[in-house]
Image 1 (cartoon, one colour):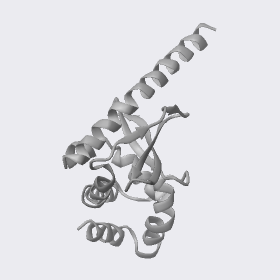
Image 2: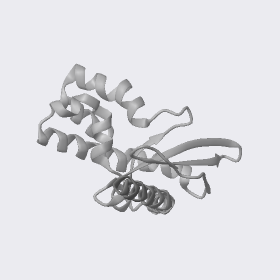
Image 3: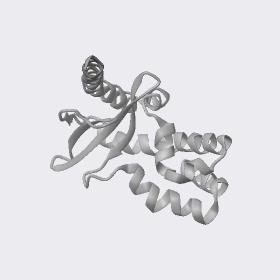
Length: 177
C-alpha cells in the first residue's frame, strides 16, 4: 500500500510540474520565434520524438545515421519554414492560453489567437519530458489532428515508401531552402 501511495504522490508531482512548466516553455518558444532566435527555439522542441512520430514504424527500419540525417533535415525545415510561418501569426499578436491538460505521458497546452482581427485560430502544443526538461513534441491543429499524424501519413511516409530515406531527406532539405 505504501508503494502505491508513493507512486501516486510522485506521479501527481510530475503532473503538477509538467502543467506548471508548460506555459513558461511556450512563452519562451514564442519569444524566441518572435526575435528570430531559432537555435534557442529549436532547443525547446524534441526533434527526435517529432521525427520518430513522422515516420512511425518506419523509424526503426532506419540506421542510426539515417535517423540522425532525417532529424537534422527536420531541424532545418522547422527553422527555415515552420518558424517563419509561425512568426506571421505570433508577431505582434497576443496568444490566449488555456489550462494545461495532463495526458498519460504528455501535457497539452491549448492556445488561440485572433488573426487579422477576426479569424480565430485554435491549436495546442503537446509536451513531454526529454532530458529532464519539458519540450514540445507535437502540435494539434484546430481539427484536433496531430501535426506528425497529418504530415506523416500524407507527405512523409508516402515519400519514404516511394523514394526511400535518402531521397526523402534530400527532398526535405530542398523544401527547407
